[in-house]
Image (cartoon, rainbow, N blue to C red):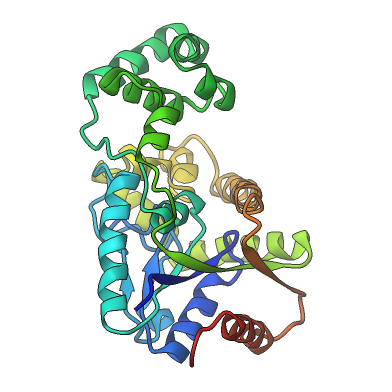
Length: 314
């Protein structure tokens, strides 16, 4: 079977899970998650990981594959997601890929990414110490001296990516841009049919985000965060997940619960803006904008018709 993927993307709380499950059921296929935080076990409520009820019997890949605090690179994601996609294709089905992490979805489609899993922690530690002692600007100046292209693209406060670019240079002698160009496939491995889902009105999206946060808190987000925090599991990449770090002030007795909930809502809205900025770069995405009163059945019908036009058989 041709290397094809159906990709469902969009900002957080836009309805991607419901649409991907409905399409997967119609196509009798399986879903591959492209969410960088749903990879982690025990981080269920805060990552909006689909429950067994929401999965409706559809098999989901790349969920719960590593422990909180365990390093997990884009290269590792591509390795596992590509294997899952090939397995699904070998059984005569088209995989449905869903996620708001545009980087992961793009990396899977192209199957091209710097595979430097062998991070030199001493290099990382050196620059983290420099940032603490001299400030982020000092680290950014080091990057500008060896990789001006990345330095121009990255803000000094984006310390994690600034240090990552320096790690690549010190490990390989090449800039991260040179490494990516070296490892980039001439053509993407997969032909992706991309559907973007988003409310027509930005305020509708923000209302959905606020409502989701309230539901998460009701369903036990504070208790989930407390459990991870007390066991020292909110470390590494997992510690950056929106919905957990926002409640540390409450757990440490520094902030009220109400303030932390409002902080999470604000950061989630800002995250949705960043997701849309990333996704709008891609003019191959077919966007479905729905209004507040539009029925889910209409969105599903629109998606189905679009896929049929692109050769997907039902």
